Amino acid sequence: MKKIIFVLMLVLPAMVFSYAGMLDDFDTAIRLSQIEDKEAIVMFSDTSCVYCVKFVKETLSDETVQDLLRAGFVFSQIYKSNPGTASYMVGEELKEMTYNDLYAYFQIRGTPTLWFFTTEGALLTNLPGFVPANDFVPILRFIGEKAYESTTFDVFRGKTSDYMGKAKIVRVNEEEYNYVLENDPIALEYEGQEVDIYTVWLTRDESTAEELLEKGVFRVILLN
Image 1: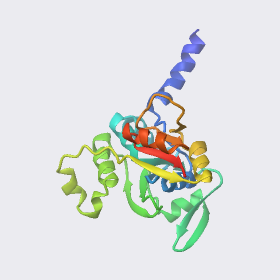
Image 2: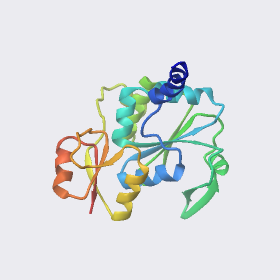
Image 3: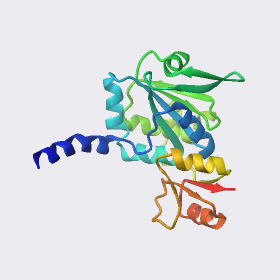
């Protein structure tokens, strides 16, 4: 019994503090962002980074932060030690690089550093250092509303905003549909389950997609 309790003590913190939608791959985050029509956030981390752990445990465990991320963002945490390669458009060329080279390309001098990408995969802005939840929430709203197109963050933060995301149906092809289903940890194919508006629901039926949208689901993926 003591051994079981000890194991649970080791497992439960990870369950409590982890964000269910977190990815660990650069390419997957960018691709899902493009398919689901969401902004992407890539957190450049280091295995010995205390403030990276603090951000995950404290900021990403905040309920409002999690709801905003699930509603309108794709989030990934990566490391220099990630296996394989990552690809990114440099000018008009899709450049493949190691994760170590990726850190150099994005000029990561300290961790955590968060890079924000548009729904097309273009660079938006970066945010170095630890950010508490009460600061991260308005940042997510500023990016999600695209308020940066018309105002500054300081002006935006001085106003009240209850923005949580924009509900929409995204029409995709078969390959994109399967890619979301296989790679997005918060995506489910709708088969009559209880509806969580922050889940990415996939359906092959037009009327079902409309019903999910009416219920307030932020992202409905419809096979076109």
